[in-house]
Length: 429
Image 1 (cartoon, one colour):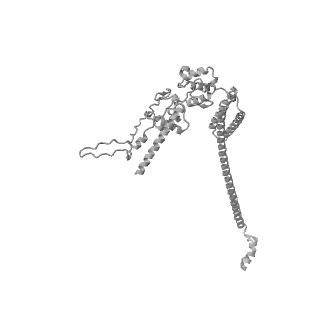
Image 2: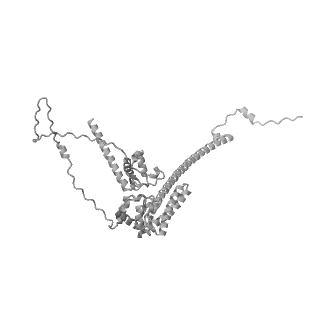
Image 3: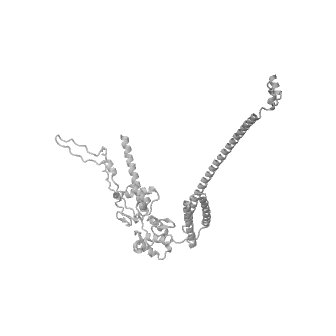
């Protein structure tokens, strides 16, 4: 019983520790992904999304939250929230955190400390015996040694506050980029194909007419005042953070490699076009051989659409994301190739099976034909023999048989009668 109780207690401790760690990880993730820009928690945060201060009382279980974080619009139709997690584990940590918001837990009463063992001290005066009928005077209890040792040390001097960057410090685009990620801006904005699609693409934000440093400062302070209808929440930034973020945003411009494809990308793009043409011909042949090629044509059309997109990028001199399009089209081409190879293999198997069947039929026909011929020959031989016997029966015995069988003896009287010529008939007078 004692071992079972100890095991149960350890299991509860481990479970509580694991749950606490998951909540902490979820809170860290909540802050790192900038969820506070849209959701308010205990009065802090944006107002685009619902207030999460009392999320625990809404009745959503952990699995619902996990599904919601993995596919927000799928669970809540019409939701503008992008997918902010990469794995189910991250979704679970976030679910544990938001489910802890507003939850009331009764803290266990602290256990009374066990009394410390009495220690004999030479300085303690001996207790005198009380007279009969009188209560002994209560001696003041000496503080236990354990309590004395547990007394907190005198407070140390408070550490000096961390130096705050001066607003006049040189702005840093690198710090601005880190701040852009820390505030979760990538959940709504995309840069060079990475990020969300709720807000505008910021790949070339530094080249947008009118979006100078002053515009960026006013927009970061109050997005809706500068861009009416914007869903972007205002971020509480210091002067230094604002300057760093502006340096990053205004530095987002075309690079030399954004104007044209690299030599390696050009070679891949050319090979991709030739490969798609060859696949088009193979799809046509598969259709002629009886395959339903509707799914293949859909895939082929998707690949050619990406090729057309890259062509337009090259024409306009802006190939940002072109390599991603080429890679996606190459993946589609590989998928088409595998599907056509599978069909060709099935076709070969069917042809081989048909050949085996035909060969079997031919061999069976040969065996049957030969057997029939043998039977016909035997029949012909037997029929000829029967015909010969019938012919001999009509013509009499053969000469050889006559020599072997002597003629029967005839009596003399019979001979004379048979040898005498017949008499002529008498004439009438």
